[in-house]
Image: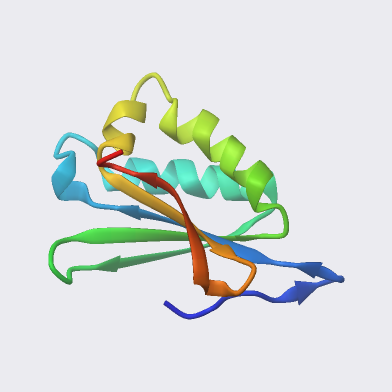
Length: 115
């Protein structure tokens, strides 16, 4: 994955990526997760790129760019991962990472479905 760090008005922008593996939670609609992520991105003022792929199994990547990833992560936890309706299914089907001080070279694992 390429390093996505840019300076915007003097603030360093970092990346947070949620990878959704739909096969791990068949009842979860990826369109619903995408709608939630888009709403959170708009509300938070983060940019969001969504890509779909099928390398070794189907996946959807939600790549957020923000100058305040820790606060964005808190919001995502509350609105996605602790959601009463779909939180358990989302936790069971996602991996979440964020860039570190050297981009993806020292990324941090925030959540893994096996943890």
